[in-house]
Length: 119
Image 1: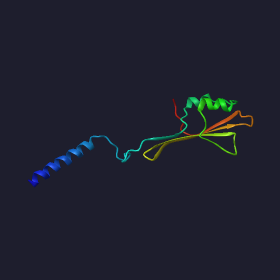
Image 2 (image 1 turned 90 degrees about the vertical axis):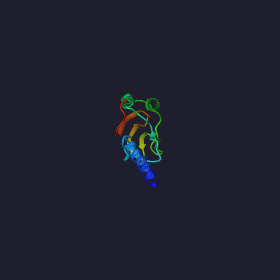
Image 3 (image 1 turned 90 degrees about the horizontal axis):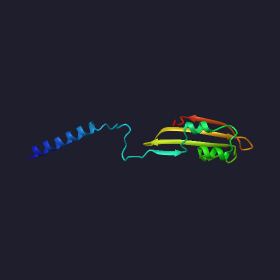
Image 4 (image 1 turned 120 degrees about the horizontal axis):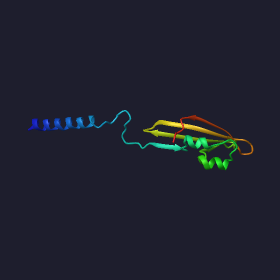
């Protein structure tokens, strides 16, 4: 009787091993419990960046790419757009876009660091 229980347990264990081997799950990226990919910041595409032109007002810039994540308290002429995506607590993608204005609130330069999304 014990031999039959052992054989049944062995068959179930082998079956479970076969099913996990065929599942295609990459266990290096898989974690328990499941963690949802987290996106933080402004999602800006390269076509939106291409629409920015020198001389645009702050209202026009915010219409094209949205309101910035942060504005410096002591430097109102610079807006910073930050985007990050995390998957399983690991940073997968990020970029920072700095939009600079002159004293009359006209766009002067756009600087970016990181990969901006192509749409």
